[in-house]
Each structure stands twice: as C-alpha cells, then as structure tokens.
Image (cartoon, chains in turn purple, cyan):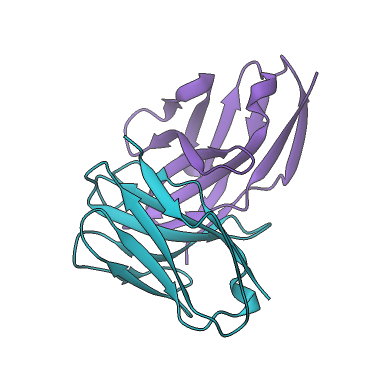
Length: 111
Length: 114
C-alpha cells in the first residue's frame, strides 16, 4: 500500500530563516501530491498541490514545493519564515480517492 | 459561505454508546470525506462519498457507518463506541474526486470515549 513519510516530527527555525520540510512517498505511479497546514484547534488548509507538469509548484503564503520523481519526494520550502508560520504541516498523497497523509511535522518559529 | 461545518465540536461518550457526527457543506461539492486524526499518525480516511448516493470505505472503516443524506450532508455514525475511537474527526469536501479537487476541511469534532 502507498505510504507517506515525513521524517521530521518537529523542526525549530528562527524567524527570517529558510525552511525545508521533507516528504517522501511510496507509490508505483505518480500520485497527486499535496501539502496542508493545520493551526492549533483548526482544520487543514491546502498550501499547494501537484498533479502534473512543472515540478516546482507555488502555493499560498509564500510556500513552494518541488516534485522529484527519482527521489519520490515532494519537499516544501519557504525562503523566509514568519512567526505566523508556526503550525503543523502535512504532506498527502492521493490515488483515486485513497488519500494518505504523513504523520506531520510541527514547526516552531523562534523570535 | 460557511464552507464545511461539523457538529458537535466536542463530545464525551461512554463505551458502548452510539452517536452520529454531522457534516454539511454549502459549496455544492460532489465528494465528501471523513477522517480521523490521532497523535503521530496524521489523518486517516474512514469513508468517502464520491457523489450523492454512493459511499466507499477508506483506510480505517471498522466500527463506523456513514450516510450521504443528500449532496450537502454526510454523517458518520458510531454504533457502539470504543475507547480506541477517541480521536479528532474531520469532515472534508471537494468539487472533484480522484484527487483532482482541493479538499476543504471542517473545524473538527473532538470525541472522547471513556
């Protein structure tokens, strides 16, 4: 069965520093790929998604992600983190309505 | 637009009790989903409905039933609650199925089974 791995449970970065959150998936074909963000006590909000085409995807709030087929990865990046980016981030993979989420990476932003 | 709404926000049940979690969306979406979120495990799909009148099992359907009452509403029922069903439950909807549509999530229902 397909799976999604987010190797980092918790990451701390300083405000203004760059950020990269890792995501690897295990799946035969190229699935649909997503990054969601969840603030405490809230539902999930879509940051960006990849279906096909350009492997560098731009999302909301200044986030981007790059799909690398050879590495089965879909890492999320942001050049300069803001304090409001502190949240939990989930990578997800969808194969024909079978949506699988990673365990999440919690981001803490230091002032 | 309210988006996706869920009721109740919080519920405490005793083992063996039953309850129904309600979900409604006002975006005229075809597909609706129920997930549970547990610490360290991300979200896991319980059931989904690709269109009105159809439902399908997801990754963790055991112990749950669903009803797609109409295009707007998708309910999740626990017939005999167990402590293992303590979790946060999220409903979501999307315009398209098969991963083509963005899923919009409700605020969640926190369920505690004693």
